[in-house]
Length: 209
Image 1 (tube, one colour):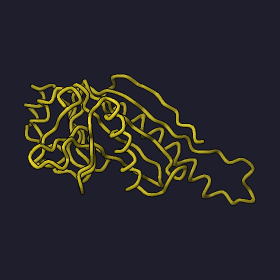
Image 2 (cartoon, helix red, strand yellow; image 1 turned 180 degrees about the vertical axis):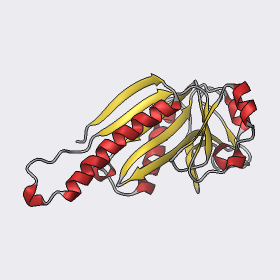
Image 3 (cartoon, rainbow, N blue to C red; image 1 turned 135 degrees about the vertical axis):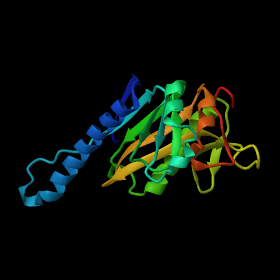
Image 4 (cartoon, rainbow, N blue to C red; image 1 turned 90 degrees about the vertical axis):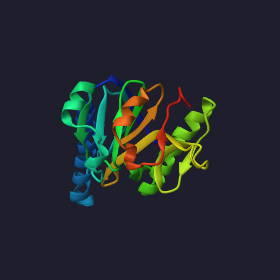
């Protein structure tokens, strides 16, 4: 059984958490590079990659994925300052989302070669973890075709709303970034963006349900 090193790093600025993730990912990539560049006959000791799961909460921040569109941020820099919200362009997939107090953010830094080398299945498994977690609290979550994340009333037109956003980066099968589950998040901050670039769906939390 593969060991995953769990750490709750508490409330932390987004850029600090991003740097920490990068350091863990780069350590694993360095191990892999050394492994690939070392002839088997010369390898006397093979250091293994380590899997990590970080939990945290961020001060208010908007993050834009590498395939995102700036027009989905609906406020200018001065308004961001008034709202006391930071903004970062990131190297994860997906479009724009919000992180803030009352939200559980999970960052799995995993070597998928320990599990399954299929990024699509990894994302579906990540969704399944959230769906089962919500079920424990009596909330029925589900998937929306062609839209990553976890949704409520995904099959009810006009009522579908996102409760958990997801976006990852993967290099040599090592992942980083992850999910953001709205627990009792102040949802007004989603009014200033087009969440995940989707215009016809709303956002909710476990508290609002």
